[in-house]
Image (cartoon, rainbow over all chains, first blue to last red):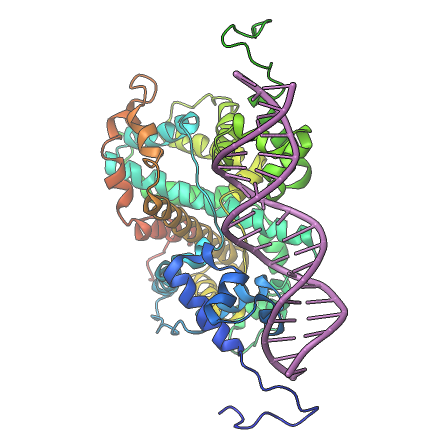
Length: 225
Length: 225
DNA sequence: ACCTGAACACCGTTCAAGT
DNA sequence: ACCTGAACACCGTTCAAGT
């Protein structure tokens, strides 16, 4: 329940713009025109206010983006998780995936352009050929290639942006701050791992995951008679 | 060997700017200041020429980016591939990965910002907890989580940008054009799959790869006695 | 306290004009 | 044929001034 009367103080002008109003307009704009169209100026126009006004309710554009992502995350319903650990992993991963897939712009906020040319296709050929020679159908071979590609793109991308962000070093990395302030009773494993997290995620585990994907997607190796 | 004399014709001014000169300057600029700093105007300044001049040698900024990526791909040495199919997959994947990792800006061209907040951590907790309950050490659990995260980010990202690019529909999708013009003797499997490629990559195979990663990274399930 | 216009330092791109 | 300046339609952000 918002205060029906502006709080007392040095008696100023009553606010005509609220933070939630801004976030709503931002979502509306993104849904209608795509997230690339979310500019401070357009957002202000959408609300019907001067661009400079927004800087009274939001620190800068990045602050606005972060708020937008957090609001969306808050709204994802906590899934009922199965007891079996393996199933629990699959379920949580799926929710994670589906949440992102429902609003692709959220992941698109992390991306921009894709331009893959002809001269790198020999690698694709090698992977597809290897899969077929291992007994895959062409369909399975393509699935295998795509899984490797997704995993590879994700790995490079996440690590690159993390490094990038660390290098900019303006603010204290944000994620570390988040991790250290965790509720032990709500997220026990993460809280226990919080201090080791930076060093654990610094490791190069690309090969680890790569082998898992390849082993998991090739037809189970039958020992030749 | 470039012609020592400008080719005859309606006798014009001799070129002071070449396409390769532009690409060199672009790489220099990216290496020095990061790819975000690659703007048409800065690039022109780096060369010492008016911004508008560049539009005589390059169609637009996207053309420049694409050229940059293709040039880099051309320069990756064709790896000697092992005979064993499984090993061949690993090798090609690794080259692919290493090539991107060597110049992170190439993948960063596909990305922009990462901002993951506190309220989605319950999913991470569920995955890590499930892994530990399955017999993983904390280290292994984090490896598993990261692999899933990379794979998921990559999948969403690649598909989203692909869809996005398809929606813009200005030019004929580029990749399709590339695929159809393949040399059958050089890339036989890809050439054979070229026409089915769009439909094959349109399929949702997220679960496929996800199960492979999880199965591959959990300790081999010992049937309980 | 809240909102604003003017201003700053940028973008990518077009186009008529110069050599 | 090649290069240019002026111009257009934009960005994000700051800051002194208004109510």
